[in-house]
Length: 199
Image (cartoon, rainbow, N blue to C red; front, side, top):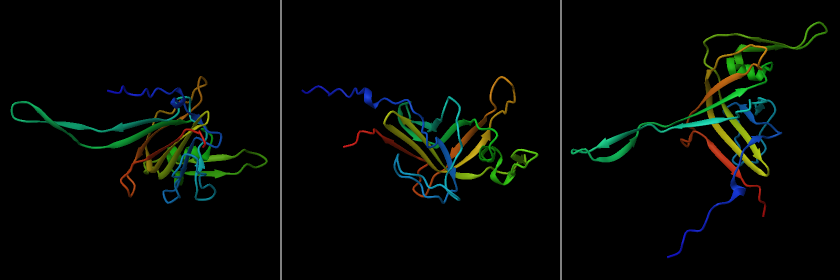
C-alpha cells in the first residue's frame, strides 16, 4: 500500500490585494468578458470602468445552497435535495466623491455632472428615488506576488446599499450588496486563478 503524497505547498497560499490596474470594474452586460485572469479588459466608452478603492475588507462572496433532507418511513435519512442556489457579493466603495461610484449606489440615470468653472469645482447631482439599480457586468481583480485572481460576474445588480455615515471619524463609503444572476450557460460567475509560474 502506497501512502498518499503530501500536497502541502506554501506557494499555493494567497492573500490578495487590489491590482494597480484596478480592483473593481463594471460595464454594460453586452461588453466582452475576459476568460483568463490576465486578459486586458475592454475600456473606453461602453467598456469597463474602474470604480476605485475598496475598503480594507476587500471583496466578500457568499454562496447559498439551501437544502432539504428527505427521510424514509422509519426515520432514515435517504437523501438531501438542493432547494436553490445563489451568489452574493459585498464590498464598500471608498471614493465617495466620484460620479461612477454614485452611479453604483443610486443608478446611472440618476447621476449627472457639471464640469468645474472658474467659480466652482466639479459638481455631482444625484436624484434619490425608488428606481431599480443598473444590471451590469462586473470584474474584481486581485494580486498576490506573482499570483493573479479574477472574479467575473456576467450579470449582476446591486440590490442593497447599506447605511451611509457622514462623520469626521471615518471616510464615507458606499456599502454594496451585489446579487449575481445566471448567464446563458447558467453560470452565476467565473473564478480565474493564475500561479504566475511561467514555463
